[in-house]
Image (tube, rainbow, N blue to C red; front, side):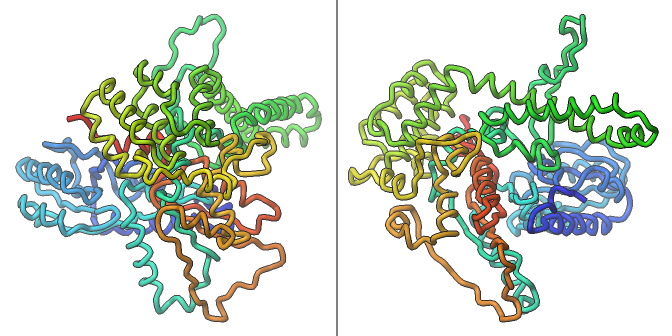
Length: 557
C-alpha cells in the first residue's frame, strides 16, 4: 500500500488499488508468459500505479518500448501492446505484428488502449490487415492518477473533452446507485486554465516549484546533476565522479520533503539547518546509551535516523543547486521584470530587459514566457509593441517560429490589446493579486508562493469558500468564459452531519494544467486554522511555464 496516498481526509489509495486490480485482471486474461510493449509516454504514469514486481507476479517476463520494424526476440506466449489511441502508433504496431508473424511460432497478440478504445484506431489496424491478430482489444481507464494524498492528475496533453466525458460517464455510472453513495466532496470547482493565463508564466518560488522550473519533475521523479551527490572521499581529488543523473522520487512519503516542498525557497535553509542539528543530536545519543535496553532502543531507531540523514543530505544538495541559480544576476533581473509586470509597472511599452534577452539570443522559451506575461498583464500589447517583439523574435530565432507565435496568439497568451482597455489593474486590485509586504518565512497569505503575487486561480477558490463569488461579480464578468454554479440535490439521509470545527472538502479541478506553486497555495489554505475548507487537487496535467510554452511551440520540420 502507498501510505502517502491515504494521509488526507480523502483516501486516494482506494483509487490506486482499483486501477491496480483492473490491471491484474487484464493480465490474468492473457494466460501464460507475457511481454509488454509500451507506448513510451505511458511508462511514467504507470510507474505510479504498478511497479515491475506486480507485473512479474502476473508472468510478465519482458518489456519493450514501442518502436518501428521488428520487436526484440522474446520467448513468450503473449505480446501485449499498452498504447494511447493514436493513429501513428497503430502504424508501428502493425509493423511489429506483421514482422512477428513472419518470424515463426504463433504468438497471441493483445492491445490495451489507455484510457479509451478508439474506433478510428481499430479501423486503421483493420486497414493494415492486423486487427484480426488481436485476441483481446480492451481499454484501461487510467483517468486520474494519484500523485499524492491530495493530488490527482490525468497527465494528458489534450484533455478538455476527456474531462467532460469522464464527468458525464461517472454521473451515468452512479445514476440509480447514487442514493446509496455517501458524497466524499462537499464542492467541486472546475477551473479552466484560460481564466488564469498569468500564473503559470511567472517563475514559481516554492522549493518544489523551483525544482520543477530548473530540472523538471516528471511523474514524481526528478533527474539531477550527479556531482553534488557523490560521496566525498578524502584524498581522491574528485576522481571518478558519477556521470549518470541522480534520480530521486519526490512525494510526501518522505517526511522532510513533505515539510519543505511548499515553503518559499528563502525559508528552506533555516529548516534544513535545524533538521541537521536535531539529527546530529539524535546520533550523539548513542554515547548516552548505557543499559542493554537503551542500546536496543537506539538500534531500533537507527534505520529511521539513517533514512532521515540521507534525506537531509539529498535536500541540502538540491537546495545548493537551486541557490546557484537563484543567486545569479540573470535570475534576479528576470524576476524583477516579472514582478514589475505583475504589479502593473511599464506593461504597455517595449521592455529593455526582454530586448536584451533577444539580442543575446537567450533561450526562446524564456523570451516567449516574458513577452506572454507582459501581454497578459496588459490585457494584450499595443499593436506596435507586439509587432516589434514579433519582428525581433523572428529575425533572431528564425522565421520558422511564425507558427509558434500564431499558436500563442490563438491560446490568448500573446495578442493585441482590443479597444485600448487594460482590465488587469481592476482584476489585480479587486482580487488583491499583488501584495507588497510578504512574509516568506511565516506566510499569512497565498502570495508567498510567488513572493508577492497571489495566484489568481487560487484567490478565486479562496473567495468562493468565503465570502462567496457575489462579492466579485464585476471581476467575474471581465474574466474569460462563462461562470456558473450548480447544486446537486441530495436525499435527506445522505446530507452530511458536520461536526463542530469540521472543514468542508472541495475538489478543485484545473482543466488545462496546474503548477506546483498553485498546489502549494491551496495546501496553505487547507492548513489555515479558520479556513473552513480543505482542498483535493485534480488536473489534466502538472505543468510549469516552460513546459506550457513548449507544448504550444511548432517543432521545426
